[in-house]
Image 1 (cartoon, rainbow, N blue to C red):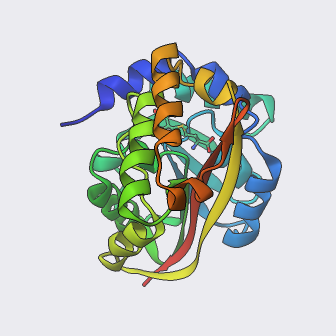
Image 2: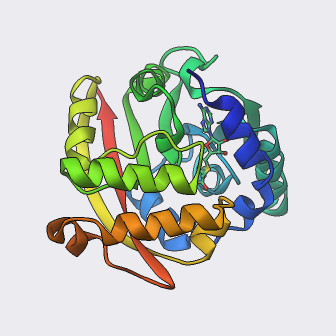
Length: 251
Ligand SMILES: C[S@@+](CC[C@H](N)C(=O)[O-])C[C@H]1O[C@@H](n2cnc3c(N)ncnc32)[C@H](O)[C@@H]1O
């Protein structure tokens, strides 16, 4: 069942936080994305689930035109403010669901999506749609929350993510990503797992996680097996998390 109502509720009330978020506007992440994509000045790009617009804006500085889509109108409004503040005029913002894009086939040289795939309720359809609108030879860039390979981290870290954010669907481990990608018309140029630490309580506050759920999250981390625990160190003021980054070319 679609979780769009939950997404709009959760993100609608926090749209400004996402525009101002230092995690989402991290310049070294955005620079790395641009270095990997190597955009050309005549490229047309699509930013899927633009949120506060950071990905779309970074792309707009290097390409001809960027279409930015999101299901949450408040996010699109914040992204437009951010783009206006940068003085950019080559972006369009549109309310669209990634599962049912209205764009024609083979329209984009670049399709990018950051920090969003874990919200999609049918990741296979979402990825097929992203590939459908990409030109042959076009580049797909994905950065998203991930978990370590293994039955326990895949189950327990996704439980944690859902306790933190009720619109969370699923964070894929690298091995599950490999299974998803096999079914798509893509050549993988680069796939990597990035280890991160998020500061507490900001990581909870950004999604409004209640105190009870924060306690359950700590219990889950304490109850992990010794092997999983080594991959997920945490303290009163930080939590460990992973991100999966992908660059692929459509064939
Ligand atoms: C964390 S924000 C994205 C951050 C942004 N991409 C960046 O680089 O800063 C996640 C976004 O995904 C959007 N979203 C979730 N499900 C979606 C869907 N099915 N189609 C389009 N957007 C979706 C939410 O509305 C939210 O704005």
